[in-house]
Image 1 (spheres, rainbow, N blue to C red):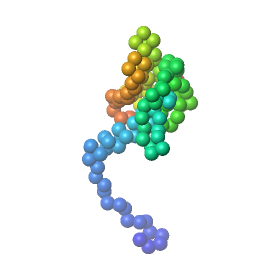
Image 2 (image 1 turned 90 degrees about the vertical axis):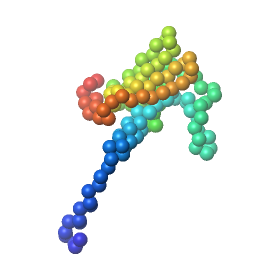
Image 3 (image 1 turned 30 degrees about the vertical axis):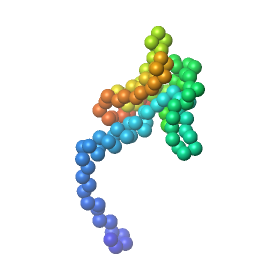
Length: 130
């Protein structure tokens, strides 16, 4: 293109539904994946493993859990919901930015998991839901 002219548009780019879904899943996982603070340790080679000395002292508190972005207690108010059942020793955590995301921590088995049932859309009205 000459100076002052618009550059040629790029050719159309086709993506498959599987590629689109993988992109959405990765984006949601990056925004929501969590674990109890300190549950995993990283060795000098970058490998992650379960911390053998790990214990959650306050499983009912958001501050006991973290995402790659940081501790849940420092997140936008209303983004996370934490519910702890002291009888079952089970904590469930919901993310209201991506409705359909759930995580759990079991003090009985010392396990954690993340699960998403949703349409892939972010709740853009989170600030108004608080």
